[in-house]
Image (spheres, rainbow, N blue to C red):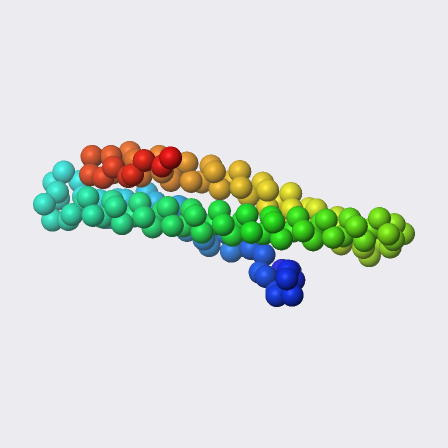
Length: 142
């Protein structure tokens, strides 16, 4: 869905796009199993560097999704506010009321995606820590 803000169309992220963006999290176990060596293959792969690169990829994906979701929430909130103002002036306009409901539903959906995002991120980082804890310690986030 395209929204117009400041005269420029902005793309509001769709759930299918989020699903694709979560691929790295969905495949974290496989990525760790295929890139972080077990004790018998320790010398053949630099586990520290591999874990560091995977961590940076995970964090980059998390930040990208968070920004996209929050941008969509802000844009949709602005549309909802605008539609509420229009409805106040023209409370009998059914098309306007339907559009407002549609945008409110989308806003609630995107807000719930933030909760989903938290669960996905926590799960991925837990798996990462379990597998990479002896090879790499990520920097502390303040």
